[in-house]
Amino acid sequence: MAPPSSDNTPADPRAFLSETLRSIQRSGLVRHLRNIQGAPEPRVTLDGRSVLLLCSNNYLGLATDERVKRAAREALDTYGAGATGSRLISGNLDPYRQLEQELAVFKGTAASLVFSSGYQANVGTIAALVEAGDAIFSDALNHASLIEGARLSRADIQVYRHRDTEDLESKLRSRAAARRKLILTESVFSMDGDLAPLEEIVLLGKKYGALVMVDEAHATGVFGDTGAGLVEALRLQQKVDIQMGTFSKAVGSLGGYIAGSRELISYLIHRARSFVFTTGLPPAVVAASSEALRIVRQEPERRQALWRNVAQLRQGIERMGYSLGPTESQILPILLYDDRQTMAACRYLLRQGLFVQGIRPPTVPAGTARLRLSPMATHTERDIEEALSAFAELQSLLQSPRRFDSKRLPSLAKTI
Ligand SMILES: Cc1ncc(COP(=O)(O)O)c(C=O)c1O
Image (cartoon, rainbow, N blue to C red; front, side):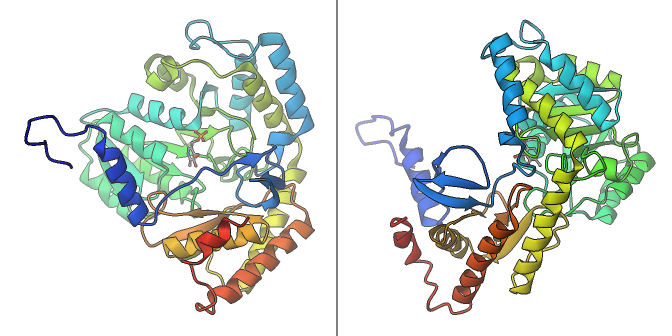
């Protein structure tokens, strides 16, 4: 921080901005917004160039489905562009009722509540359920929105080792005296693609009198007979207290939700501040989610197509000797570990016409930088083959470090 000058003029209050940005630059963690032209189809135009999209959460291709777009257009014509009020005042337009009823049936619960985003659903729900004097038990790799909700609640936060139910149990035992207890986990972990041991977690919740909240952001649409998620696949609908999810990924739209008992939903309507103090979603978005949910349930062939693409991509990548970690889902992280190398690889692939995103700290722990691949149901076999040949070229460069100079690649990126 710059010291005050000798004539007592206060130090520049904006100095921290440039100081922080310089430090980000020095640590090699600068982030850029990429400009994508057009819809999230398997192939997109990025900065004026056609590339294969392999890092979208549009897992089932529903964001661009004609029926989903038509439902959104019709709601736009009927209800206008915005809800223009919080849901408890004037923003609870008709499409919400239909979506929440359908969602409860889909999730096998008595009721559901839609929030404006998944982030808001997590933050508002957790902060409403527990407070100072209570205890939260949170998986070490949980998403930022679960962490933020936990911090906001002011409950005692116990972080247990990733997917480690022994550690979870020892923490539950050590906080047995806490008033309310809440276990938080994702079902499909967003950056590693591995799965939470939900059956054991549910048993521990019961044994220690803790509520269990499961974030199904990346499982919804992908796991389960009707695509309702890993909770459905494991037949745990009646045992998980709070099923959270989002319409922003496989459902291809926007908005978060909580599914559970009528009492839970009624409580959240009164107590979840991120629900109460924000404007309702645009009706076109709510109608798009309803239509997309119907397709998720009625067209299992989309899930099958996604899993076929995942298998083809995964087998090809593993055959080349890349490390994918313990993923069991559609999220395939190629671990390259080093931040600069990861971003250089990302730029190299872009030059080859493949758009994958490099993921670095703070999104993932230090030393675990990766390329996070997520194929879509709408990719063709040829698309996946094309991606695999780019990864084969990258692999031969990575194996001859003199040819793969991560410092030189940034300038190459400018030629794209
Ligand atoms: C596991 C997880 N939970 C919650 C969210 C937040 O969802 P949304 O993007 O709808 O705000 C995300 C998305 O980034 C996520 O990956």
